[in-house]
Image (cartoon, rainbow, N blue to C red):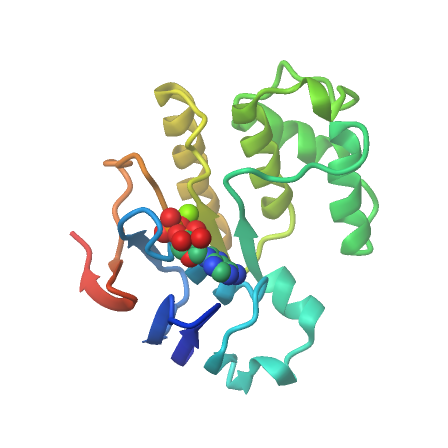
Length: 213
Ligand SMILES: Nc1ncnc2c1ncn2[C@@H]1O[C@H](COP(=O)(O)OP(=O)(O)O)[C@@H](O)[C@H]1O
Ligand SMILES: [Mg+2]
């Protein structure tokens, strides 16, 4: 939950006095002109950047009182251009299991790869030899392995063709049903088939909230 959050990187506020709550298992689409602060809003929610003023409340506690690791595992930001680590795709997934103190589970990963149209890619392939669209889906899968409470998706289908865009959303909707996660997403392309419960609109540094279809 955001209470009167402002983000002021310089002289002027980019986001001013923003308040809202994300409900459990909710679908929220974020809209706004290019440069209006959509990515900034998602990064503020995931605590990747610090706000200037206002409070972020998580399960009745202000953010400063919440264990940082716990928070970051619950509120997951998936970037449009994910940064891949190490040398191979496997390295990237292994890191996720390590961060959760769990043994690497190759079957889970191969299942996700297949679902998201990446069955043709070897886990030992170099991260330098994959396309932008493949990278986006690997970046996404990293965040799905251990289900968060909220998934923040920042234009994650921007490098995909229509078929793969549909595939990604079909899987995300099934994933949401199974794991009861809230999804808040920014998309340049209208993913018509995906219906939001609410629409967050950013304009002139403020947020207005509308009910979805
Ligand atoms: N930490 C920051 N410091 C200064 N300017 C920033 C910072 N983060 C974002 N901006 C600026 O804020 C504006 C909004 O950025 P962004 O959130 O990426 O917009 P959107 O995702 O809606 O296109 C851009 O002009 C960007 O350059
Ligand atoms: Mg953006």
